[in-house]
Length: 135
Image (cartoon, rainbow, N blue to C red; front, side, top):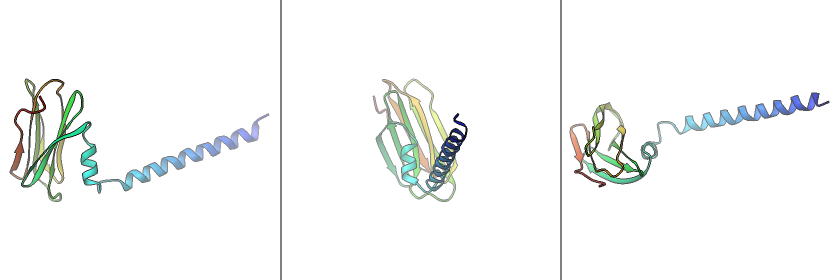
């Protein structure tokens, strides 16, 4: 009863889904590594809370209700150099990301509901840090 029309409609829907997937994959490819500040801002959940600038970069902190996130961003990305970011809740262990990076270290996230945190970041030997904040 529905023989020819059902198969044709199914094929059209399948083709539409495949086209949508291809367009989405193309959009992801175009928005790749060239989106420096937008990508850095979206790596951490929450709202931007504090930015600590220093000679070779900046330490960025973000806060949501239960978590604090931090990352260190180089002022001039390019060559690999030593970078690190550390975030410690009061009474807890520090979350650390360090190594030789071109653009940023982190993000690192800690659970900090009703707890102070301290953060530090460095790029090529220069650093910035906070005391106990967000209490």
